[in-house]
Amino acid sequence: MRFVYALCLVFLLAACAAKPVAPRNGLYQGSRENSSCAPLSIDDRLRILSLANPSNYKKTRYHRGPRYGARNIETETDCSSFVHEIYNRAGLEFVYRSTRDIRRADEFEEIEESQAKPGDLMVFSGHVGIIAEDGKIISATKVHRRKKQKSAITKMAKENFSRRRYVLRYRCGPNSMAGR
Image (tube, rainbow, N blue to C red; front, side, top):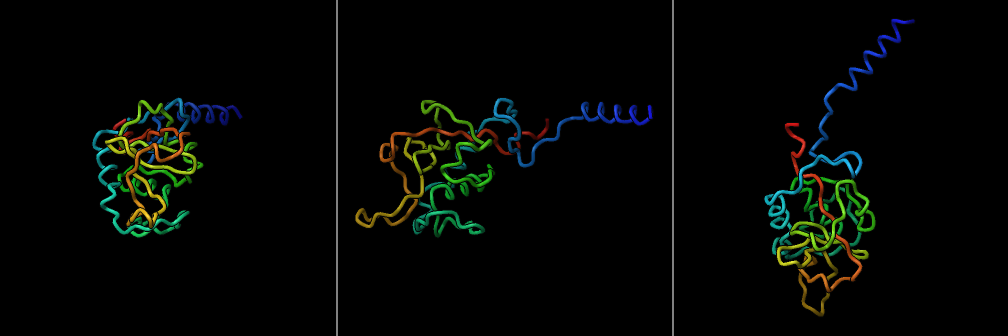
């Protein structure tokens, strides 16, 4: 019986001494207070903005709600699906969440609007978009025929949306856990 206890103790000590396993794809796993991920690099931000450029989506239609399995935002999308796909294409993966639920995602942290940088997300009541270099918001919006808007992917001033807003910053860049 002592042998079994001794063996259990050895396994327990070995498990405690083991080096932690890095999360897959550099995604953050754990509590928000104990993040060991690196912030987004300038290259990450430039890649996000390049992929989100409205000129890439001249014929995209607005379609409310995600189309599971359909990843072609060049034809139709909504705001949360657009943001999700842009981040995934930039190598910054996170599980899809609706605009209402993205605030609770462990991969993001809420920051003050004054600290916002291009590539961060700005979330409004029922809407999400990517902050551009000029402070405008790149997002999928409903097309208004009266305004001759041809694509659902637009770049608009944040004042065009509700005043209740907050900013989310991706907390883990790709390969942020490599080499640790």
